Image (cartoon, rainbow, N blue to C red; front, side, top):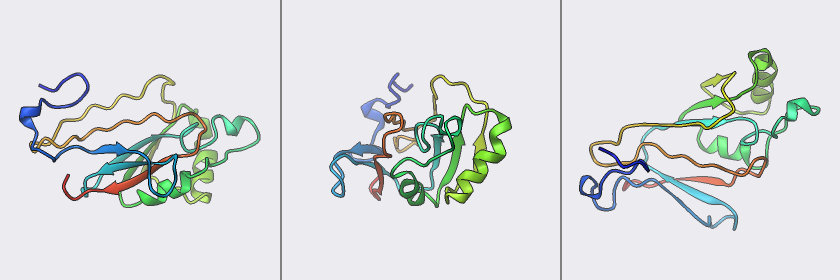
Length: 153
């Protein structure tokens, strides 16, 4: 059974494998962080407000992408992308139109989500590869992540 932090006991891991991670700093920007992942296809689950878009911008004159959001989303374009938002279903058309006009690709968008924590639980691969990662970024801060594939994972 896994530990509460989502990591498998060391005896179930292969040395040097199965450890997607975050590495800081990125060589391109002092405040950026590399998300190190496998070369397998991934599912990205992202919140909208405060994560990719200005928090409640739609209530204050209109939506706006956060710095780095478009570039980050472009780097994960080959993977499945699920967007979550607490926005009401009544804002679907307006929100989807803004995202598409801004060049933000996604596969699914779910409206009406609760405003509390987002919790992800997944099983580890038999190899011990970690298959669930979570990152909290500062609300409305630039998107600080770069994605790096590591073929050893």
